[in-house]
Length: 197
Image 1: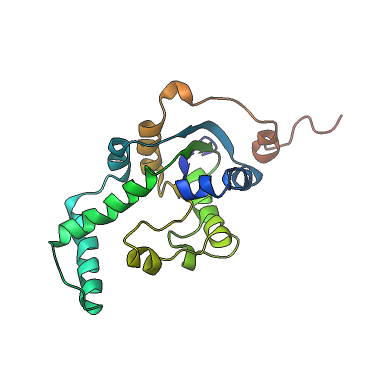
Image 2: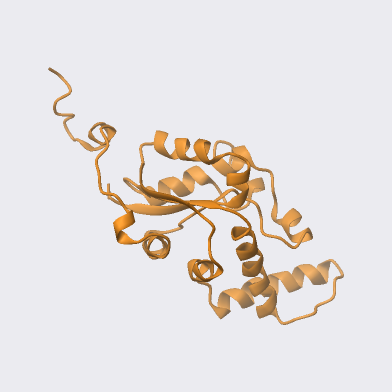
């Protein structure tokens, strides 16, 4: 469990707002370590693989979009699957609009801890104290009214299997460094051996 890894991506809005240091600091202060990190402009191909959605997901999300458009009195101009794909297209357009910081975080229950620290996908409903809750005010409604992706600062993997798949997309094996931090003895050494002289 102490070697569990997760992927975190500081999105273009987080980079542009100068929040990289604050985000990394919050993750490190909790006791997790960074084992890989890079600044890149993401490619569309990697992002389509990263989001990894199937037709059932597109149809479900597109159906919600159609219901929303109907409630607002807007015309329905395409099939549900295309409205669903529009959501991903908007995310990919946003994620390729500028540089992102991708990094691998390792430690006990890394996936769950980072997810809790980041907060819910929609900043409006993220708890105070989470990164999204503390640093942004965007909402699904505002994003939808502008036909754009929600600007929620960062991505983190939802589960261990997803983290493993995503890390392989963003990093080669030789880019992930295996090393020890001094504070890992404090966090994981059962007896804190060597503390007393």
